Length: 402
Image (cartoon, rainbow, N blue to C red; front, side):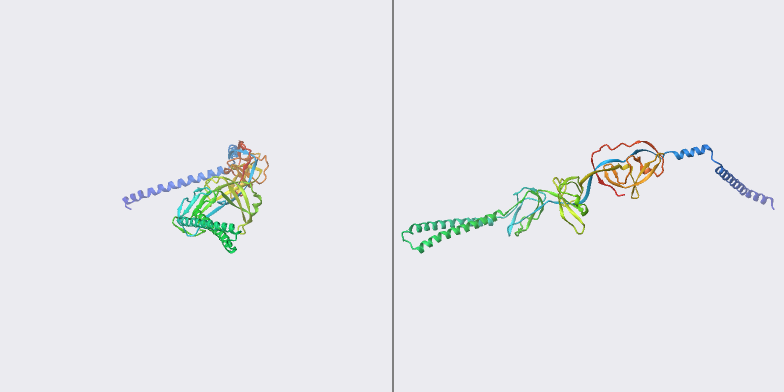
């Protein structure tokens, strides 16, 4: 081979040789490292390593305070839903037929007093009829006066025989007829006066106008409703209570009613309906609202009946873990390990919750931070959680079912 070509070939092969040598060296180093690691893992652990592992295992997962179930006075409540309605409504209509409505003085929402004028009809026709009736009364009175004078003369002449018995009878009859005619015309005049008073629509009771259909200029028939009035402005809550709970509700019981978008309103049971709806199996309970505040008729409202009092074991809500539809507490064992216990919860009392399932009063339970614990964790106890500040009876609200 040409010496020049051999030299070129040797130069080209040199880099490939160096790369192969480097790869072989790397593989060798990796093999030695793997062997060293395997030997280290198979070798028995040193006492120092075992102590470190034991210390890591014994390290507390969380610092906690402990609490025990506490007997708490409870006010037993029964919840219900319903609508707010008027205690009683009065329908105010027209008493006359075919008269034109001339003026409407009130509108929806106005508070009126008994006897206040709400609207008036045009009364020109009634005024004319009244004037005509008064003139007829005057004419009848004049006729009666003449007939009475003739009858008096006939009585005076009856003994003398100057007048026949037939003529005397005619004069006395004319007197009685004139008297009857006068009474009839007076009665007709009274009717016209009554019709004149009916041109004014008066409030039958004090209250609040809840509806208005009266329109100025309308000619309305007799009996047509013009206004609707909430008597006394009184409202009531009509609660729908299941038939199974109706026996626990009695007239006079205190009720807390909360309308949609409003605050709590104090009420009192007025009566319990004597029947139950056959479709819903609910009965109506009528609750008076003396001070309705912002509540309006037609609003939806929820409420609670105070049906009694009692006591129960409660825990802070922070001590109860709600998970997967169940409730749990963490009991502290003597070795400071926690044990998860499933419980049944009841009513809520402020920041506390009733524990229905029996737990001994001296049981030590984790007071807070239960969401960071697992069954068997070791904890460090730092003290007891403070007891409830108030021992007064509290209002119990229904809790989530567990």
